[in-house]
Amino acid sequence: MKPTESGIVNEFKELVRYRYLLSQLVVRDIKVRYKNSVLGFVWSLANPLLQVATMTIVIKYVMRLDIPNYSAYLLVAYLPWMFFQMALLDSSQVVLAHRDLLRKVYFPREVLPASVVLANLIHYVLALVVFFAYLLFYKFFLHGASIRLTVLWLPVLMAIQTALIIGLSFFISCLNVFYEDVKYLLTVLLNVFFYLTPVMYPAELVAAKLNSPLLYKLYLLLPMNALVDAYRKTLLPPITGLTIRDTPIQGLPLDYTVLAAAAAICVIIAIAGYAFFNARKWVFAERV
Image (cartoon, rainbow, N blue to C red; front, top):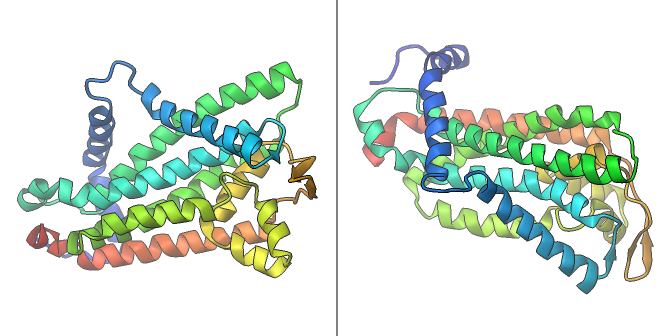
């Protein structure tokens, strides 16, 4: 039965009333992920760490990208990308995975995509704790570097990224109910965008290749491009002495104007995703 209340405020109040269900779905997602696993959360870190180690070898010794402590610069970009990727992949299946619940019980359908985003956010926060432990030991304990005040931007960047992910999750989880090809297309698109996003390479490389400030700004307006670049430049010292095939590449400061524009795009995506999901959520039980 569809509720008689309407409007974003009433919908949000209803979601708050079902916060216990939301928390239980988040806990269940985490427990299922580590069911019958002795090492538990360690496995969530093992994959990105192995990927980072492999990419470090390829980039530094095959492509000859000379960045001191490249693994840290790679990890600080790869962790938010993993949060983005895993949350979207999980959201593509979440409605169909709860088809029995949808048919039997009334609850705000927004709880489903929200639960997988929050579960992956928790994994991301735990991974960041490990990253900061590594950073404190390597950069600050061994090399005596000081903590940068720009680290205070971290909660802001996480909030912006979460808004982007929840908006896209609303779109994806809804569309996959009607067209199950969406989950396959999503996998392909994520693979493509991984290489378009400055994860394995610094954004400065793109700026040097484009040789156009306008095109570079447009490139950074893709939200994940701006966010990955911002994570690097707020959490780590500026890249210095960067050379690619013996060609020096100039480090660039964080463009806060572009970041603000990207943040606005993320908010728009979140609102549009919610509106799209909300307009179609009451036919889910019939479709699944």
